[in-house]
Amino acid sequence: MTNSRKYDSIIVGAGHAGVEASLALARAGYEILLLTMSLDSIAKMSCNPAIGGLAKGHMVREIDALGGEMGRAADATGIQFRMLNRSKGPAVWAPRAQADKKQYSLYMRRAVEREPNIDLKQGEAAEILIKNGACYGIVTKDQEVIFSQTVILTTGTFLQGLIHIGDVNFPGGRGGEQPAVGLSASLRNHGIELIRFKTGTPPRLQAASIDWDKTEEQKGDDPPLPFSFRTEKLFVDQLSCYLTYTNEKTHDWIRKNLHRSPLYAGKITGAGPRYCPSIEDKVVKFSDKARHQIYLEPEGRDTDEIYVNGLSTSLPEDVQYEVVHSILGLENAKFIRLAYAIEYDCAPPTQLKHSLETKKIENLFLAGQINCTSGYEEAASQGLMAGLNVIQKLRRRPAFVLDRSEAYIGVLIDDLVTRGTQEPYRMFTSRAEFRLLLRQDNADERLTKYGFEFGLIESEHFEKFREKSKRIKEEIVRLKSTRFENGTLDRFLKRPEISYQDLIQREMHSTSLSNEDIVHVENEIKYDGYISRQLAEVKRFKKVEQKQIPNHIDYSNIAGMSREAKEKLSKLKPFSLGQAARIPGISPCDLSLLAVFMEKNARSYVSRETQ
Image (cartoon, rainbow, N blue to C red; front, side, top):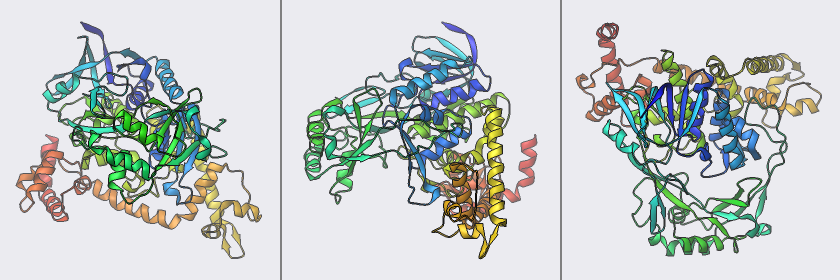
């Protein structure tokens, strides 16, 4: 059976990546098919009930500035909002929201259903269609042939998914859902390499069975700050989270039963996330610690289900009971869902261009956990960027690539396609060289112009953004030009013990700026010297990035270059000297030889590129 309609793009998978890709394309005017294995699982928060956090919150604000939906969804469905790391510098301040899981998924489903250019269909992709090295559609498990100009795969943890609980394992894309079993073979048949990764989730407990008096309450910020630059103010009755800890009794139960953990018994072969380890890994690898934090997080307003953050495990059911009941406040806790680990197929991202199009197959894009990442925010970022690059391809325009000095999203994608990863990739502020420029408060300054150019940012909001930018610039000029007895106000504000509010309280200054504007102004003033130095570093960075490597270069002809460098450069095909320098194993000597070789052969390469 052949579908009579030809789409501009087919998006396979309606998780966080698939939804962002679909909405971007549809809002830009293209006809989209969004194929999902379950209409009830659109943008499902299958693990923790939160959006944002360290570095992840930066990416959510970047998604929003580009015209994505995740920030607005978090604002609409959030039940607690906090700005993390306030005691540290502004580069690492990070917004985080607890979300109502069901409401978040419903919000995203409504967003998709409201778009007239999206056909939403329940089904499973079993095969990609390839002709002359280009993808032109898919075949479903029901043997329906569907044609399109492009395809974006956002399959999450569903490719050959296998769930583990102690000695028991069974196929599943996540708890209660079936895996995707045909697409892996199709990808391999067309030359896409796949590997096995592993992730996991903790148990869910019944709220009424927890002794909350034995735990520490964690309240939200008052007032709560929104994620989206398009949300003017939040009106939300916030729910609290609660903190407790493991103890030596907990750790003893885990040590005694390590042989029953599929992770330590050798039944799980996939690499797991280093920075979100299971409780087994924590006890073994951090044996010097007497306790580990456990956060008890509500999964929504209308559910009794509590997410036990910090207790991810694949131990057997009976051991899970003993471990949970050994923790203060959880002695009589009742289980709603068991914890489990899941193995799945994913594609090493070095097979991708920076546009997230595969190098081997034209018109085929990969986004989300299929690219060896973890986390809702990393997935949504990739989905949006894949959607924007499909727009560029359909418009016959160059790829849209954010560099490492522009956005955490740029750092994410460059790390993936240049360096690859041996474990599920998670974003951290430490991964960004220019993090003082990539603050969460200035994401709109950096990226709103792009969202507007793609047609994803409304004219009304863009005008408000321009007015805000003007206000901030004028205020900075005013502070620099207003003198008092010991100098200018900006110099006084640079003192560590002085805040913008101090200027107002001392009647040295007055303003009508919003709190968000004030934070932006204060950060620009206080860190002016550091920002100037980073801008100079960015200038040098861009100079190297602009030295593009010709497509047809033959690295085997570069005399003196190491064999490892030749092999890696030939495989990864970096687009610039800057990207080549970031490939593991490429030495400064290799880079110098490459630069000299390019210079000597510049004329012949220009001739070949123009033929």
